[in-house]
Length: 381
Image (tube, rainbow, N blue to C red):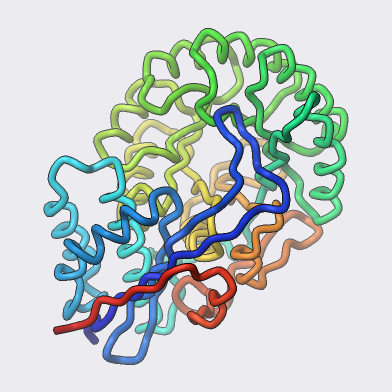
């Protein structure tokens, strides 16, 4: 079985409401869905969410030749060749391109054996995964947090047992928001706070001290991901666990981040860190220092299903919570590309691992048609 074709589908949609965080308002969402096809008639899927156009150019112009006419069962060898071909860009679009290819090749390798990716990675530790709602998001207007209780009520009715509101208006506003969130969910449910790299270390340190009494599970990306000293200052200012890593691509960047002593929760994104291969390398570094790794996922159903597979194959860690880590991030904002998964949350806040082979996602280009803005192909010579 050899790879004969790579198809790229550029996808776009506009959220019903702009999704605000501490740095920006997301008014349009763009993705690259990558389909890798074989001469055996199988297709595997990967995704780029951060730099889809740049990653697409790299795949078409540079990386496809390392993949076409190779077996997806050799995904480890291909990963090493791709990594060796990218020169200086080991944290940006090149790693995102490799991530999508690696994800698709794992999907294909598992499908060829009629097993799930989780089984390919060593076996299913658990087939029902706890998921948290990634929201609410900041809104434009005089009171950016005014709608949070209403959104959270909707998430809880859907079955979520944890929510992750965005923060970063000001430390004082964040503290008031956190108090309202804790009041909304009560003492038995959980919440996290995501600052999306929006603060200086001084402002972030002040914010975590002011929200500490509300007992969030973690504070995520309080400062820029490469500000390791800033991360350390924030971690030293609070007993709240500090999370991050979604923006890191190279193994060296994960090593430096973990070695800083700042993170308690590591969040590699499979579309950024090198797919399943890169994720497992970063997770091994975390395991060596007793840091929990769990997937970050805020894109299409491709990455979400990949994250479910990765979490399902990961040994659990018990911290006295409603469910052991790792948990999986779920986009509850009305994202139609998540809804392609046809996966539902049960009343306990769990999503069952899809029963099919590979990623467990049965996808065709026809499913993507309403959102495709451009399509390209690279074929075997």
